Image (cartoon, rainbow, N blue to C red; front, side, top):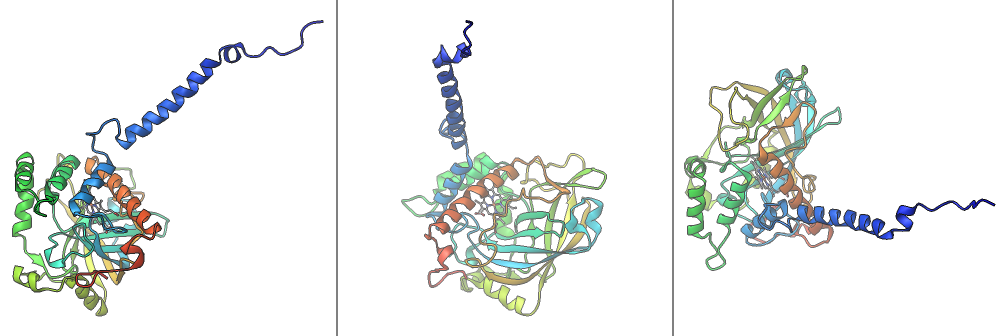
Length: 370
Ligand code: HEM
């Protein structure tokens, strides 16, 4: 009788070590990939975690449940009203003459949710627009017209140089000097911070996207752009003495007073780059004579405390974009997206654990934000 038993595949059964080796290789490769992403293999590589650690260290302490940067702010709601002009350059639905609702946030720079408004040089606007075709556009803009440094590494070095020295509680002047020497482009930013008048309100401040993006039109043509939100409220300057005397939360109080009298408006002005304008370096402005197009109006109708408002759990990642808008080659955009995600995960983790000012709404007495 012929042997009817099936012959086992000889390669695996006779040499089980081959299978074991293959499994070990797969497991080892996955472990290496994790270790690389976590930065354990490259202790000098700038990972989003390391960047966020540096931001936390620069804040002097971790404010549980709050954004690791721009920690103090309020939620706002309203709508964007396109005027049709933007539709020439981008297919984004928001540019049609329709109302697109948003959940936004007005904030000040800095890592403390309890800092004094009169000390906050940088003010900010973030928006999450939800269009009626199911698209979302998130943006986060600042009152400075250009970034202080030309690279993400440079911003990391700036963050480290600005961290308080444990001995004095202030940044180490020697570190600041060597940072400034390594980043000559920072001098322009320092001059802006020193010389530009401070405004009296979130409402009469301009907010700039600073990084370059690409608008894609209905023919598929891509154009490099930047944008700004220009306030319709009249500018009024605040002297250093007025800032010192002002209440620690004057921005929020002013906002509420203004909103009680009606909505606040900003024109969205898009700047179109010309051939050769730098798109990978947000520390360099484009020449003034570039084409500017007003594409619509941001209208803020209401504000709510950030501890309970809808903006609390939003990550204003600048790379969440609608059809018709794309990120540019500016590497700072990718760095922002990665670091915001770590900051977002940390603060949401704090909140989920119940260990957070933001979760409880608890605020210290004097300088507390709403
Ligand atoms: C490498 C460069 C940058 C890093 C590492 C960085 C880091 C951060 C972090 C960690 C947050 C908190 C995110 C969260 O928890 O949700 C944040 C918020 C913010 N950033 Fe940046 N940032 C960078 C560049 C910029 C630039 C160029 C702008 C705009 C011109 C900007 C505007 C803002 C604004 C407005 C917020 C507050 C958004 C909100 O209200 O949630 N940042 N940033």
